Image 1 (cartoon, rainbow, N blue to C red):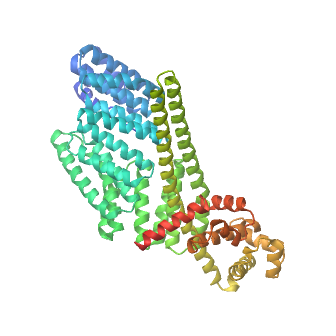
Image 2: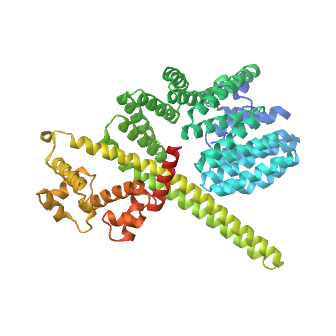
Image 3: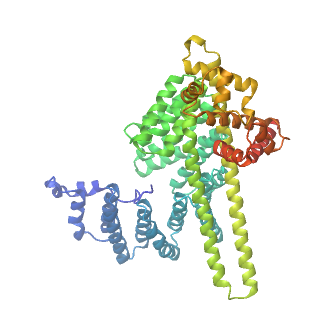
Length: 581
């Protein structure tokens, strides 16, 4: 959430100290006090009073009151001819629109305000306000539109040779690529933004860039680079702290920035073997987290869980993960909840609790697929919208010369092609991540099965013993390759009846039916064959695994792996080549 009013406004305490008689009655609020003296104020003091009223409304999370205060602030600044104050108030109003999801109002107000900033050469406010539109598109999962807007900002800043504008645009481009999970492009853009913003007076955006860049490097497991970037981040923070002290600002305002920096530094240390340094940094971050809202504790809990996982203190790691799980549930944070469960499954896998890990992975995957499908649908819908907009533009130009028509069609086709390429790249990246998740799930299942095999017979329930026998004959005799095999044939092979077999599978295979479990075994075998036998045709793999219908094979494969057999094989080949290199 953007801050509606920055620290340039006077604190209400000034008025309290200056006018003690105002507070003779305890029921009078700071707002009432300011409004009471407002008619007596003139010039800069009057503008500062309006700024303070806006600050109070912002702190109270009162959108209507804040907008009303900002309108009065703008009107007073305009009446006084104070361009700087009016520009600041105008930008604060657009931030207010953004913070309260008043998207239509923001889009409508932006052109007029950008024109005002431009004509009065208020370039920082100009580019900061424009960047709100990029943030809005990102929030709506309209990544292509956001990227186009960010590149417009970059072109505008380059034309004006404005370093701050170039820094804002680079940050926006990095942010879009970050959300698209394109770590390579995000890293390039964020690094450029840091270079451009490093010497600016306002370091707010620079601090945000360091935070996001560190998150990208963490996601890409580039921990050596993360170590270098966070060291530079800490150095900039220390310089900013000196500046705060010199200017008389509250140094505690930097606490949240230091907290994020320490957590990123701690991660870089723990992932490169510096466990002692990492723990010290975590303690420092924890101290800065005390007294904050529960949401501020989420990253700290995540980092502690990872630290103790690497230390092989798995019970402690799970305890921190459980606290994080509860906070995400309280906040109804579905994506945070998913990430927390994935971390828990990873801890369980490290602790060799394979059955628990496998069950949790099975719980996670449908949610992960659902969120990914929703995001993909939104992005495809965005491409369709872009297509329709260009189609309308094309129709308006039809009456013009043939050359104009040809050029427009060419531009339209290029846009669709670029959109398709961008979508394909995102899909391929998503499939790589999905491939890794599936292989980890299969590893957990395999380890769970091995653990079941080595468990003494007298400690197993009747259902577990039957399930173990089933897996043994399926593995040894590969009965699943027979497309006609069913409940009766399997139960006969095991010397039991179909009902007992169905109950054993339901209890031990997360509620699956006999047919579902058979198909799961076939799909796992198919995945292994696609990796181990690269020359065998994809359709032949399905037939060898017991699928008689090509459409059933493809449908079930996509349901389980989240991609087609061909896409799965291509990613496996790519992984194999990288491993060889």
